[in-house]
Image (cartoon, rainbow over all chains, first blue to last red):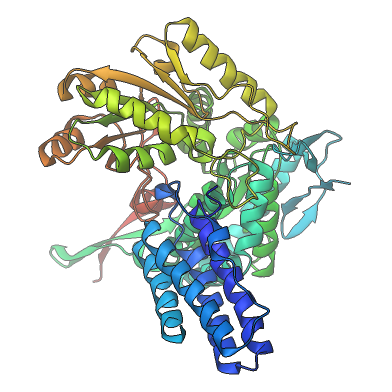
Length: 118
Length: 483
C-alpha cells in the first residue's frame, strides 16, 4: 500500500507531521523546537503551493505513511530522540522521490534538522 | 441548497435575466454544487455597455497602477490558494495536485501581466527624415472577451484577463457552465481589489451568451479555448463581425518513443501526459508511437505502471487520476474505446465500467491502453478527451514523424529519446505548435505564446507571451515634425 504516492500526498503528510510535532514539542516544554517545527510547516506549505509543477506530475511508488508512525505520547528525552529519528528517516526517504529539485531541497533541509536532534 | 450563481456586471453581483439555470455537478459525487444561469443577449449587452463605459477612465489609469492591481490580485489568490484548488477539484473532478498546478499556472499568468508596463514599450527613430521623428506606441484596443472551457476552470481565464486589463482594456469573461464556480470565487477576489466598475465583468451561460459575445459590435476581440468544431465556429463568427480572435481548438497529440529512450522514466512522464486531468486536456498525450524495438517495451511498461494508478475522488491526496467531467462525457469516451476495439485495436488495459467505492455515481473511466492502433482507426484520428492512450508502431524515426505530421491536428507532439540528433530533427520537422523533448505535456509557460497549428488553432496571435500583448493592443505610428 503506497499512501504517499503523489507530490501533494507527501507534502501534506509532511505539513501535518510538522503541525503534530509543533504540538508535541510545545507540550514537552521545548519552545524552540516547537517554533522550528512551525517554521518548517509554513515552509512546506509554501513549497506545496509554489513548486507543484503541473506538467511533470508523476506517480510516486514505494512509500507508505505507516512506516513513519510517531509515538507522540512519549515526551522523554529518549522519546524525543526516537521521534526525531523517524522524522529524519521520513525526509530522507521521500526527498529523492520528488522530481522538483527545489522541493527536494526543502525536504532534505527538514530532514537535516531532525538528524541534528536524533 | 446549491448556490445560485450571479453575473458580475459593472461592479455589482446581479441576477441574470433568465429563468433557466444549468445544474453544476461534482462529477465524483454527482451532487449539484451550484446553479449556473443561462444568461441572455440582454445580460451580455449590459456587460458590454459597462465595459465600454469603463474603458476611457481605465486606459488613462497609469500602466504602473494597473499593474499594481495584478500584484495585489496575485497576493490574495496565494492567500486562498488551497480553497480555490479544492473548488477546482469539486467542479471539475481532477486531482488536488492537478488543481494546485492549475492555480499555480494561473498565477504565472498574473505574474506575466505585472510586466505589462515593460512589455508595452515600443521603439522609435529620431530623424527618420530631416527633422522628422517616428515612433510607435501601443494602446489598449477596447472591450475584450474570453469564452473558456471546463477543463482548466481557474487557469484558462487567467491566460487572458490579467494581460487584457493590465494593457488597459476592459473585459468580459464567459466561463464554462459546467465549471463556473472557480470564477465566482476569483471574481469575488477581483471585487476586493476595488477595480473601477465595469473593468471586469462575468457573464455565466452557454451557447446564447457565447453567441451574444461574438456578435456584439461593442466587443473588440475574443479569446476562446475549446473543441475544434466550436473553435472554428468562433473564429468564423468573430471574423464575420469584424473582431480579432484567437481560437484554440482540439488536439490529438502524439508522442514518439525511440528505442534509446530511458523507458521507465519516460513511461512515468507519459503516464502523467496521458492520464493527467483524466486525459481531458488539449495537451494530453493521445497516441504513443513506439519506434522499432521500443514498441513492445513501451507497451509492457505502460501497462505495468498504468495498472497501478489509483483512480478516485480528487480531494483524496492519494488519488492519482480523478473523474471525467460528466456522465455524458464518460459515455462518449467509453463508446470511442468500444469503436477502437471494433476497428481492430486491442485493449491492453480497459478502464470502462469502473466503480469507485463511496463514489458509485461518479463519472470514472480508468486508464485505458489500446495497442495495435493504425492511422486510419478513429482512435488515432479523433479527439477522445479522456484517459485513453493509443499505441502505434513505426519502423523508423522517419515513419513516426510522417504519422504525426499526417494528423489534421497540430497542438503538441513530444519525443522521448537520449539522442540529440533525433530530438533536433523532431523539433525541426514536426508540424505542431508545442514540442516536447522528454516531456509529455508540452505546455508553454506564461511568458511564451501557447502554440497550436492546423486544426488546433484558428487565428494569428496566440494566447500568452508576446502574442498576447500584440492581441490586446493597437499599434500606432506617430510621425512628428516641429517647425
